[in-house]
Length: 241
Image (tube, rainbow, N blue to C red):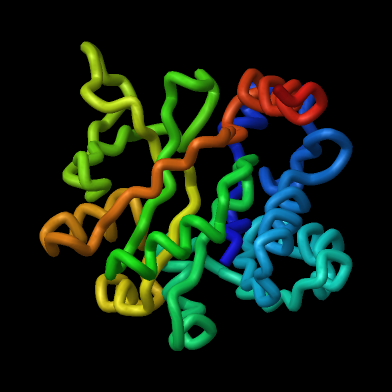
């Protein structure tokens, strides 16, 4: 599932020259970042994708269509009221009921190896495996708001809040906005309520030892939250290392 329901007000408030678009449609190297994420899915052999919609839903539908340009079959879930990252996935429970699946934040730009992530997830018996990214590699990277405490065996053992925090953080690892999930995760998400993976689901999983793991993503991840992050991602795409 690609999450595309958010409005992206933080980015637009900071950058008045940016078009009034949902963040998944913000252009990156001449095409919406959502297109990069759908291409990533197709590259790793994914053929069926669900996308949730809310603000400017028709604009996203117009861009994606049925997904055939990427070799995908796309199913839409329109949220009249925003349900949060986890609540939106819960609404599509029947779509994912049979096997482990992936969730990708549609407004991030990343080269995460989805094949390796899913393979590690299935081998480890986790309910959730979170792709994490080393912030020492790139400053404008990862999901704003928390760092992930990862044990030597790749189990997630806690989280550190970064918004407004002071002092040195213990962990360089940050949430890359890509998850592999087992259908049992739905036991932790109420139906038709606003529910969030970071605030609600993952802390609950900490109480179930061995069910929450990290995949150490060696590549890059940019959360396109600010004009500066968008500019850095643009430079990465046009002048790769």
